[in-house]
Picture (cartoon, rainbow, N blue to C red):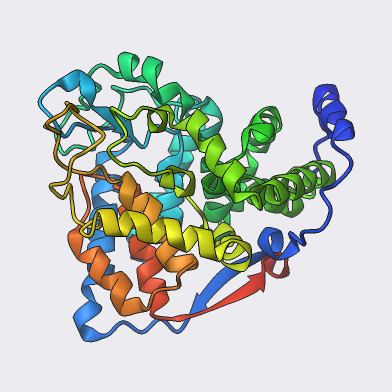
Length: 387
């Protein structure tokens, strides 16, 4: 499938024709982790059972609204998780190989339906409608409490390009290239319009995805454009301090002493995909592991569901009335544990004993699939070989 770029996109490509020098990005753009020979010990069989049980809840619920989290007693002090349209597709992709045949068929229908809805697909923009769909909190209807206020204060700055990685991941792991290809014009246009906004480690997977999708669909022009963007972005990401500073633009409460009880910039690691984890392990292992250890030391029970630490989501004041960490901590720490620290399978499995927080807890479910596969043999293979 060949699609020419718009004049605006072509002009953008021509202005960025010079590639970043030095860093070899090819392994991160073309090689994916392939796992075989997964052998779970008898006392870890629950990992697959739990994954299937939780994915079944998602498939039964249908479209999910953002999750409203509040650790205090003032509703307007809470905030929302899983706001980016299409985030659940990444999770279904990670889970797909471990589902039953019936669940896989339902997952394909689910993803197709999400992508057919212009409000729910990744190219819809930065946010899902706050009160459409099932409530992730476990109630029939979503809360959506004061979403507009939260969005105006800080939500509007949240990065959302990481969901593009989920489109490639879904096509690759489910073999469902046709569903994604139907929407290639929208995917490509959205990427071209926003590719320059990718600055955080958790967002770099967007470039990886578009390079691979364009290659598979035979769109050489978009592939070249995405490769150039990726080279520049990965090269810039080598500057750890600059990347850390850029995270303040996306998570503006980090700049506020009053609110930042987290005292961390681990947010820049949320939604990190395996390929970017490999990049971090190759080039930035020391600072990333140091930051990861700092948050683990500050919150030793980070892996529990809402452990009773002072939270940055609730009525925060001198007495730290808000108690309980949102699941974002899991999304910050676990990718580093799996792909940078390369923690042993048993340790990863112990983290998963916490269980999910609500329906469609993406950070926890992604990690569960990674944990299952950690009990197998994982190799980095060229994703073009299976075209």
